[in-house]
Image 1 (spheres, rainbow, N blue to C red):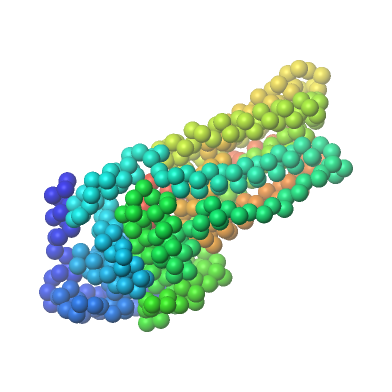
Image 2 (cartoon, rainbow, N blue to C red; image 1 turned 90 degrees about the horizontal axis):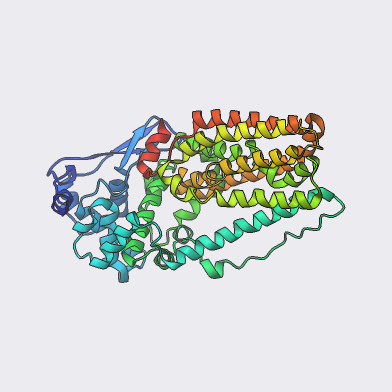
Length: 481
């Protein structure tokens, strides 16, 4: 394997064939026109001037675009570069970003980012670095403490949301007489976590981005690899999503183009105008709104009300609702493994039919007379069963899916829109359900969400592709179909 990789890294490519011009196609997002420009002979490009211009380096990187209709498929932004081109670009990157102190790490990291399978063939890599890269793939829980702290703090934030929902669940029993929640909280988590490497890169603070990555990776080499990989991908996506004028996209020392090209409103519009991003937007919209369609927040907001209407006392209703929360927590643990082995789409397609029939069974439980002991027991049983199917599927999948479906350039705005969609419809649901219950009755209102779960299953089948263990190139290929 090592010898194969070494040969692969030094194999001649089109760039190394003398006296052959290479045509580079720059695809302008949102336009049908394709601007084809011809670089000079590759022999001059490889062995000519020691320092290429910013325009030449960008044109070389843009060659990794593959045009399809009016969008572009982003391959590995480093995959088409020869070792000479790659190292030259790394030196230019280190010089312009004032990262010369980390040049050795960046060189090794860039070669690993170019072909991750052949990391053992990279010259100068140490045994400890090889072990860290190996553990990255084969030992899921061997992660640095900084990453665990980040995950724990995010989980605490999710738990705070759960506490708010639990509070509103119980308070709904006496609404509006006893509803004294105070949700104003001040957060200083930035002092614990720092800011994301992606944010630092957008602000042209590459040294801070490298320090942040070092906290989240097991070795400085992995941090250098990811820093350069993110930089190359962001640069390519900015070129692809620009206005077609490559001259305005030249990399300068001040990097002022980030402020002009990364305007939030522009990227928001592109969520709907660029085919590849639009399909990701549709898929994330479906998985997010499906979380509200499946009826989980009926239970999160109104389970105590349902149990009281089912004949339980207030104390019993609150205790049974606690059991619903515990089931939700316990059955989410299997998703840690199944979400990457069974798959996101497969989990949704498997769990939604079961959520639909358990909701329907819950609806029919209201036909049992209140005086029967089976009434509350069966009602709690089917609600618990519903939660057990929800937790490993529609519970964690929407947020995982939305975080990985968008290209880096649109990830912030895409994820923001996805979460806003989820919370907006959660708010609508919390306001509408009491009226829905008055109009349809308990059986009709719960059965209504069973029907919505079937509709959500159909939407997932049609518009949500699998993203399990997909690379960025594969996701781009999937989203163009």
